[in-house]
Image (cartoon, rainbow, N blue to C red; front, side, top):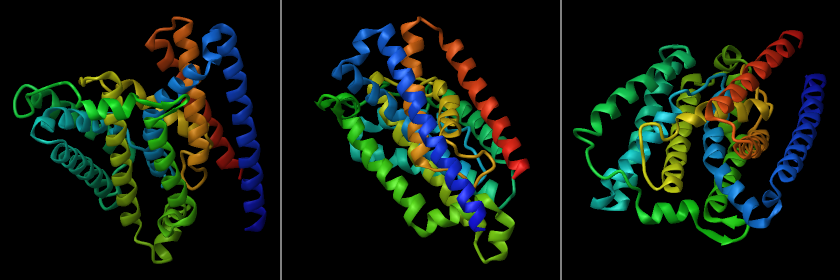
Length: 318
C-alpha cells in the first residue's frame, strides 16, 4: 500500500509541474501573439472568463472521482439561468431558490439512477440532457415564458472588477474552490468519494452506503452547474438554449487534463483548476487566431480522447 501511495504521489507531483509548465508556455505564446494579453486588465478578464468553467469542472471532478460523469451539466446550467431570468421579477431570492431546487432535483434523479438503479452514468446523464432540452424548449414558450435577461445584480456579480485583476467572479471561485478542496481532502465525504471511485465493491463491503455517496456527488455537481449557469448568464446578460453547450467538453477536458482519472479514485480539484486555466488561455489564443468554435471543440475532444486512452493504459499497467 505504501508503495502505491508513493507512486501515485510522485506521479501527481510530476503532473502538477507539467501543468504549470504547459500553462506558462501557453501564457507566453498568447502574449507574444497578442501583447495586450500581458496587461493586468487582460489577466483579470481571463480569470473572470475562467470562473464558469472552473465551477463546472468542480462538479465534474467530484463525479469523476466516484467513477462517474455528468453530461447533463450544460442543460442544468442553462435551466438554472432560465429560471432566475424568468422568476426574478417576482423577487431574486425566490428565483434563486427555484433555481437551486431545480438543480437539487436533477442531481437527485441522476444520483439515484446511477447509485440505486445501477445505470451507466454516461447514458443516464446524456439521456437527462435530452429530456431537459425538450422540457425547456417547450417551457420557454409556455409555462416558463417571460424575460430572457438576467437580473442586474447577477450581471454585476458576474462581471464587476474590485481592483485589477481581482473581480467578484474570481472571489466567488476562490471561496467555492477552497470549499471543494476542503471537502475532498479534509472531510469524511471526501474520503468516501475517493473510496467509492477506487473500488466501489470494497467500499460497499466495508459498510459504505455507496449509493448515498454517489447521490451526494451528483447533487453537488448539479449545484455547481447551476452556479456556473448564473455566472455565464450574468456575463452574457441574457439566456438562451445554447447558453452552456460549448462548455460541456471543456468541463470534462479540464478535469482530465488536471490528472483526475476517468476510472475514479485518483485526482483532485487542484489539477482541475490548472486544467481550467490552461483551457481558458488556450481559448483566448484560438480566439486571437480567429479559430472557430468548431475548431475549439475538436481540440477539446482530442484532448479528452488522448488523455482517456493514456489513463486507461496506465490503469491496466498498475
